[in-house]
Image 1 (tube, one colour):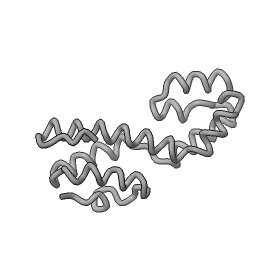
Image 2 (cartoon, one colour):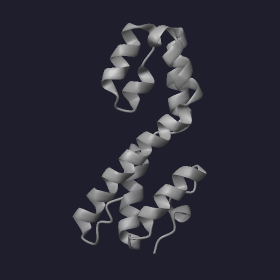
Image 3 (tube, one colour):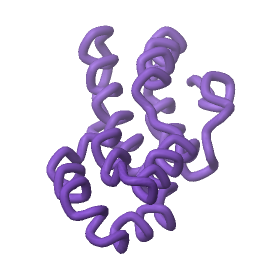
Image 4 (tube, helix red, strand yellow):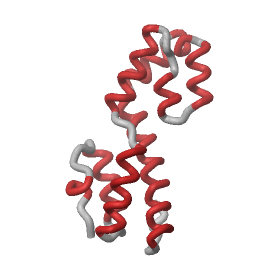
Length: 124
């Protein structure tokens, strides 16, 4: 059983706890492959905050494009972040936005790793 702290020590506590659930069912080779792929796909809360703050200088919605919410990104772009209210809410909730995106990516990566290398899929 692999320990997430050995592979991804920079994660925040809530993300680390969630990812640890994936690692319980991975061998070391699978854990390393998961880590390699997940590192390239995950978004840091700081990136989300930075791109959100760009909304206050005329580039509203970039944070939504970054996390794959294209429709919301377009809406924010053409409405100045819903008159800055959406941008303010995203600036407050930037950690949650990053966490939710990272969870979806972790689930996709786990399915990919398990299907490529064999082994049980836990359905998390």
